[in-house]
Image (tube, helix red, strand yellow):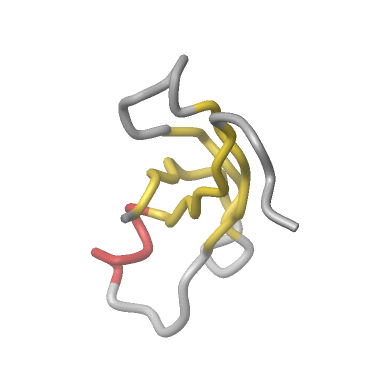
Length: 60
């Protein structure tokens, strides 16, 4: 059954990992309210591959 309302699932991807050239990616899944937050999300999250906290931005 589909959810009702403005909440959608979004994927957060590490920005530093792309530029480092290392294999793999660090991604997190979260939800946001499209009505209250129409722009893309940006959080500081832990990247287990780089072993430090980096900026993760919403993709797609």
